[in-house]
Length: 588
Image (cartoon, rainbow, N blue to C red; front, top):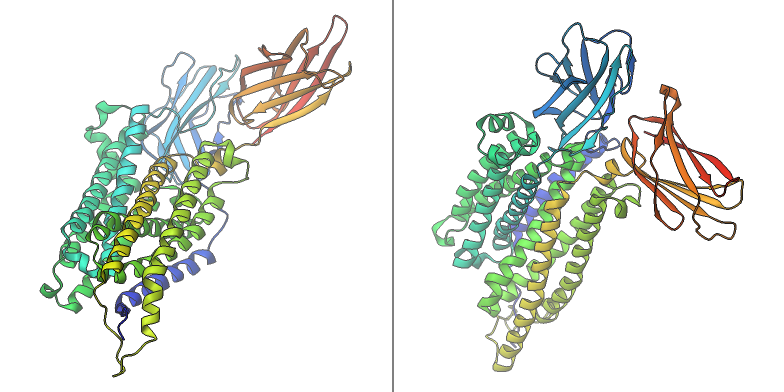
């Protein structure tokens, strides 16, 4: 009897996979044991002098406190008077979460504006300004903290492209995993080798671009500063710069190991090749860890667990999509039955494991960065995450049909062959396909190339979304529940008051007027004021404009600091009917 023989079990490769999983599991236990609620993206939690405060005597310094450790990098903390003259004395200094700058002595009475630009632990710049008063005089208005404010648009777009190049490179480089674990014959395939080296080059180029771009990105300058050696030197002294330098060093070591791994098997002793593969796995995990080390995983109070999740997530995505790239560009076009019968079932199991890891780590990262649930559709980060999840689910759906085809054509016949013995007790060998079977193989390969090609295209789209996603402030940090209250009018009817985003900075106030029957109707006039009673600030008039039937809005409601604000809305329905309602807004 003849039947398909089972491919040799890659016991040593399997042991390496289990060793890596054990290492990651131990890391997870240690991380969870010390995990505390996570934060991400630095925010201002205090300042001295306080925002909008009135001082009897001039301060000697200004100190700002953030929610996590920060760095100045190419940023600044400076103070100017009402005529824009600089009154800060010397450079600012950073001590953990505090940034301090000394002031010149003998400051005159008047308003002073503090402006700042620092770099968060996740490598993104944060900028803003606030004002305080010395002695008598009015308070000069200043915009509150703005996440990512002042970033050059062109530099930001180029940075997004550089991140995408880096992600695409690490995915193609992960094709080396497919060759080692699933397709040993691929070591000598010229196309597979080229694809892996293209990945190495793209990953290296992405890291170099990141080093060059970070300075202008953090400083808020433009393309002319790309070759500014001062900014580059500043970047190299930051955590971001050190992480990218570590990535480049690891990529250099990985290149040497890849040359040895991709040699013809007979030119390298098995023990030596196994050692090189183990070292390459360690270097690869190190490269992946540097991505999380300069991203959202680095920010917050549980960075170890977040870094583990981020590294595992990127590893699973890279191995999965990198395998797809090798399949569609190298293995499937060869149409060799023996190779397909050996590689496809192995990759099918590997991809299934990657999907499981992606589901677990993706859920954790979404919980860490997005809360509450409305932040998913109310913030840029949340909407991008939804797009990424949609792409992932589409890939899984297409992959399901590919897996079923592999199971029908290779796994089940091989399993049947294992249960059948020749007369001498040995397992039957793999025969060459007959004419009809060869035709079936060709049709199945064409279908697989189509489905795997679709998976790969969707994977590239998901990578592009991820490249933009990592540059966004986490939704947990930026989302603020908008104020939306309906108040009764004494003259009958109601008024719906909306304030978005209800946080420090510029806000939009919208008032909708309804009659007794619930129909939206015009009023004679709608006016509003804002006030912060605890600081004796206001009331200040808010200029309302009619924007529709019974709808009045203003986009210039400036909430300059945290506290309990009062919005007073006056609705005049007729010459004699004038209603006054108050809406309290807590800004934290």
